[in-house]
Structure formats: C-alpha cells, structure tokens
Image (cartoon, rainbow, N blue to C red; front, side, top):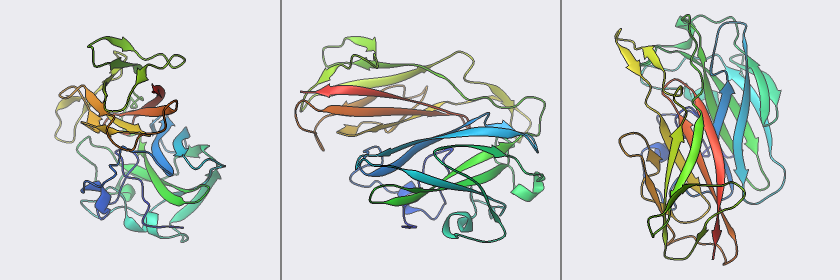
Length: 278
C-alpha cells in the first residue's frame, strides 16, 4: 500500500507531517482523479463508551471498478500538537490496532476508554478515537482516518445537514441544483456554487475555556474538472467559483461536483451534484 496517500480533510484527519495539508499542489486537492476519500460520516458523530456509530465513506475512483476498505481502531494517543498519532496510519499491525470491520459502511463501537487515554482535548474540549480505513481501488490504495468523538457531556454532537446546493451561472441566475436535471456549463466559463444547511446544523457547545460557542460550518468542494476559487466555504466566504479553464472533459460529458460539510466536532454531511459539459 502507498503510505504517502493519506487523506487530509478536517474530520477525515491528517497527520501534521503530511505535506499536502500545508502545500498548494497542482492539480489542487479539490480536483478528483483516481482513488479519493472525500469524506467520512459517522451517525452519530459522538458516542459514549460501549455505544455504537454507523460510518459511511464518500469514496470515488475515477478509474472505475470495485473499492474495498478494511478498518481498525487505533488506541495510541497523539503527541501534543497532533490530531492523530502517526503510527495509526503508518503501521499495519500492533496491539494498538484492533480490527473493527470491512466495507465502505461499517458499525463501530466506542471501547471502554477514558478521555485521558485518548490524549489532550482540542479547543472544543473533545477527545477522539482514530478509526483507520485502508482503502484499495483499481490501481491505487490509500489510508483515511476518521476521529470518532467520545461523549463526555449530557448532549451529544449531531451531524450538520446540507439543505441545498445553489448554483449561479454567468448571467447571474441562481437556483438550487436539481440532482436529476444538471445545468449546462462550457469551456472557459464559470459557475458559482454555495451550500445552505438546516437551521439546527450549527449547534452550541462549551469550549475548553468554558465559553459557549456556536459551531462554524465549513464546506469543502471537489470536482472532476476545473479549478475552484475557494476550496472551502463558510459564513465568512459563502461562495466559490468553479473556473472551467483546466482539466476539462470531452464535450457531452458530465462533471461531478461534491460538497462535504463539517463542523468542528466531527460532524459531517455530504452531497453530490453534476454539471453537463458542452
């Protein structure tokens, strides 16, 4: 397996040593080609000891063919300053790695761990159990990590919910994207995208400093063509523009677009839309 391929996106945790987390590669992270894990959703995203969560993986392989995944839970706490201990991703075996299932959708149970055994809490006062997925596609393999939050309060975090994906064409006409009736785009053009969410998506919580915070929802954008002006959007930057200037498919093809929304505490939602390229 190619250990250099470690997914790096918010609740799909990356190691601090992964250069792709800080660099600006070409093609960009938002461009989807080959095998990619774009997001992992746990329902619920925060569970108590002995409780279970259902995990589903948003994985794409543009090469086609079957995709397989095997999962382990990693009991190694991270060193201070890291989200995940590097050995969780770099080692294939050890007493700290416990198999928990196979497939793109599994059920994981929080073991009888203490908060202290999972490392230092983050700014949201949360600690997490790393769940490691070894993913194999037609011609490539990668490692993805989701951090399942340990419930320590009376109210568990819930996943945000994407309400709609809104598109605006070059003429300024805006409308929610219909999953069954994709809008048409063309070479050299632009298409503006934004995501809306349900009112209950941005929850309040008590931060590590004791203050009450409201979650910031961030949406990561991915596509099989073009370049985004912003690879992530939020309330402070709610829109991104897909520039159809590079990595374009043949006329008559479909461009796939994915939006992956996350909060700061492991909550995730994602959706898929298409654009008709002419």
